[in-house]
Image 1 (cartoon, chains in turn brown, green):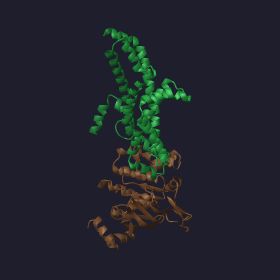
Image 2: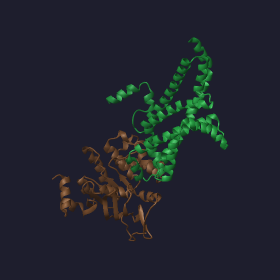
Image 3: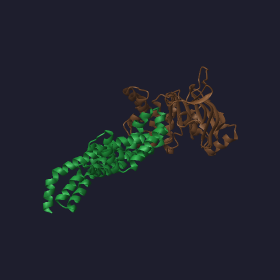
Image 4: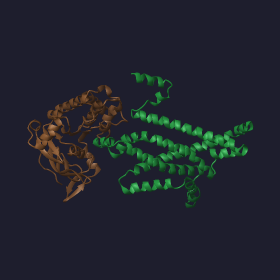
Length: 263
Length: 241
């Protein structure tokens, strides 16, 4: 087993990760770690592999090569007796329970009401008693400002409201790691703020490790403690948000930020 | 003409018996077809080549062989292997397997039409494979498959007429008897109207199922309001609000 034996395992560790779609190499020998409680934002041009990283951590894509460790545990592949072996669905599902994800397109279940969406996984995966799950779901709905919508159907809600329900649904699993994949990109500009405000509150009041892909640079600056700049599947530069957004070292980063920030 | 009507009135109890047999064949065949369709539709989506291959062979075989020949085979050949089924059981089996094979493609297609994001959300919430399918994906696919299943159900109803050739006293058989007492035009016109009435009833039932399934996905009125006479008024009211 390749397993780090130090006391405090990183929340996420990428080791020699490769990801290709056919001939197209998306991630090339990627190594990086995210420590517990870190809020890491991934920036870079589209196609640079940021979203693929989140999708690999959530096991929505298969690794082409290398290993991902969650709190020291191999996620989908492990090295045993010198051979790289694929881990079973059952193992993946155990490790996956520590990870939550919020998607660009919300992905609420339309065949369930708001509260049913939130209690579905706690009740059926974590086996939390239903009454307890409902109490917790109501607290979370209150936290995201939708206490009055528990019996609504997802399609009756605005995009911003649906995304806030999706955040509550992810938090209901008490994840150690939360993946935010361009969570405001599908929203109208005037309701981006309400979603980001909820996430700022989550960042302030919990110690959940966050891995964030966003085009909202101000949000990245407010919430994260580390920013990684990606280009063509590799890390170009890593810095604190203060440094990254004011005095980046690499020319590639400066060009990207100039293009995104518009001046 | 009026003497034809008297003959029809005399034959009516028998025609009702025939309708009864036709309905038993339709409902029994449809129930079996639904089970077969869901089982094969699910199997046909597996990565495992053996499971998928078995499902494909089954689907292609029952779609690719004639219902009449299947019926004859079950009725005349199967007893040679010591399995003797009643005519009604043979009818239900043949209809169920044949239409189930067509239905499997509908089920498979509808499951594939549920957006990828829904599957991804079930993975992100760590639902098991069974939970994913039965709690999230299938209920959404169900609403998509109902219109095509309605088509198949109507075809199955009409397909039941074929079983009269293995000596079943179904609606077609009774209509043929009526023809002997009246004339071709009269009897077959009555036959057309009765099949049409049955098909209309089935369509109405399936439409109700579709409205209910869509409402559960938060689309469209509830079945209750769609059926109530004030539905147009309440819809108009909603439109203004």
